[in-house]
Amino acid sequence: MRDPHPPFEAVLFDFDGTLASVHIDFARLRRKITALAEPFLGEEPEPSDLPVLEWLDELADEIREFDHPLGQEFHCRGRLVIQATELDAAREASLFPFTRPMLAELRATGVKTGILTRNSTAAVKLVFPDVAACCDAFIAREDAPKVKPDPAHALAVLARLGVSPARALLVGDHPLDVQAARQAGLASAAVVSGHSQRKDFTALAPDFLAADCLELMLTLRESFLLPQV
Image (tube, rainbow, N blue to C red):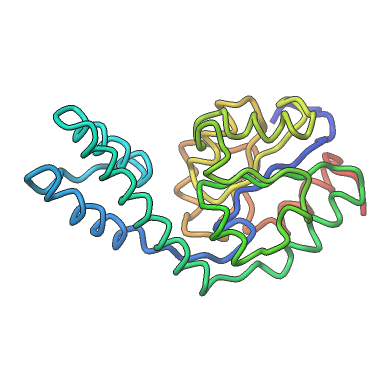
């Protein structure tokens, strides 16, 4: 972080692993996408290090090269597989106990709040039915120009809030969140309340690193980067 840094006017949060305990079995999801793609491609697709949404797009583009309608059909089916997996996980998920009080405290002290997620609106609302009423801006996958780590996702949230990237912080539990913050010009905070561990953020060196959002908020207030409650 630059020192001194002005207080943050807005805090943006990832959802899965940051505000809620959500366990999606991505290895199983990749196996489902592999099985779905095989008859379309005529062979099993090569494994990929891309996140599953981007991998699905890449496979669909490959199929479109020789049959555009077939590629469209595969993409639609793949999105349905992903959403079904998300909904299954959401039914077993729960908000962290600190989530509602934290969002309320931030708004009460004049800090704008936003939630951006690669997950679907339907899945988020199974876990957090009144999500839109508890923050100032909520943009899930369906409404994002492009999903994070593309900077367009965070910038769309900031546009709704009317806050510049230089006065905002993006909090997430995955290296993609730190990348999204950097590319959009926001300060970055990583929490290890999801699947990532502290070592996963070593190379990225986020501006803040905490066990969870509750610990992070205490650090930010002690550093006078958020108003005192």
